[in-house]
Length: 329
Image (tube, rainbow, N blue to C red):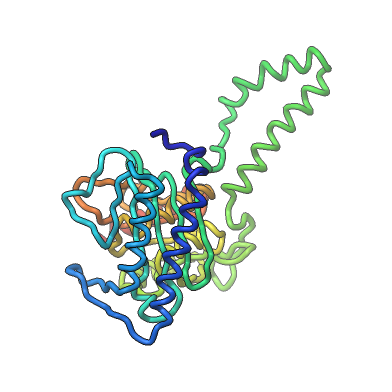
């Protein structure tokens, strides 16, 4: 089986139906007067909605792609942690605490993992019915490097000059430079470029740096990080979201950076990671700066990581955040 965008397109509609059906089941429990809740061995809650959504998703994925293995939070066993080849990674109800608190901050997450990467992801927020999806194959064009570009464009410009004259060649070069720059700026550009000092803090023209953080899991380390930003005179606004909605906020340009110091599992963020990749964003390990990897031998748990809306923000802030984390640990 070849995993490419054509394959993704062929299964997208059935997958949209799957997350929609799971969301309906979740909301039926959500709106009921009472439901069963248990505490798993790791201390996290699991509800009747988790189990109903899980049954729907597992059944559907087996029908859509019978040859692709499935790992789900609700049926996970460590001995099956690392399938060979591509596999589905499922969190049928991400944000169970938000579900129990009835704050709407919970999602259905399905990701396709291959070669330690989230190749595709689809998410639905049952409370709103909104669906996000994205694949590695839809990621924006990479930044152009001028040396490599002129290696190919130089001879073509000479050809244009010989046929149509030097003026036409100059126009050709200007257009070829402007179009990639425009694409880069749209996909990779900063939240804002112009900055000024307001009350002793660095504030960008379009507003402060937008940090998305957990609505239900903020920790002492999170507060220390905010103090660290204050010490660096970096102005920020907090965007509070639960579950994979934090990564969706980056993909939707509602936030710029998502730092996560606390524990998460691979199924918590894989689908959101894929949706963010589609928009040109990145998720990096805090300690090394390397891309966050999946199918790890040692554990299903993720290290501390940080998500960026685009590569400009990654280049600008990853080193600063990594320095904070290294001093912390």
